[in-house]
Image 1: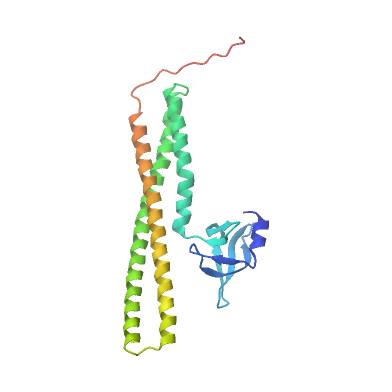
Image 2: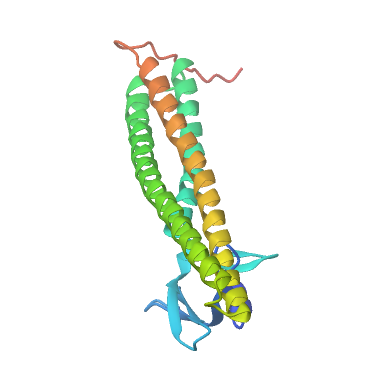
Length: 226
């Protein structure tokens, strides 16, 4: 992001991924090399909190958002993994067509396969983290449902006034809605990561099947003036 974009965000709201306002952007913090490293935000209580700039996502229509570590890692995987796989396929084609030497193929394919394996391991760790967060949201929903039941019963027997009941019920329902949305987003993210793991498996299998035995002939290319 350019400095002009950063300056245009001052005074604007910073929101979470579910469009809930976190606070107002008041400035940005520089590192010793004068590069922007953090965004400074004032919350509703007037407290200033800073967030790493690499966790800020800016869209022209929606403004500035603070994305979670999981979302950031998922974005990086979804961006980088297809590129690595495509390069691996190009390398495979070059080798099959005998357009590169076997030692070049072996060296590069080894590096690509290593990157694919590392991404697969990262994706698997993300899956475990996401599953844990899904369980947290499910427990949150259960707790809120229990709180609602208590509130409804106490209101029903006359221990809670109507105005207090309405305000409390609205707060509970908002949090149930948020937790439900968060769970759905996590499930969608889980599907994305599962697809990455599946592609990684296919890529590794494909490269294993295409391993050669022995030395292959390299086609020589002769340049003439004809």
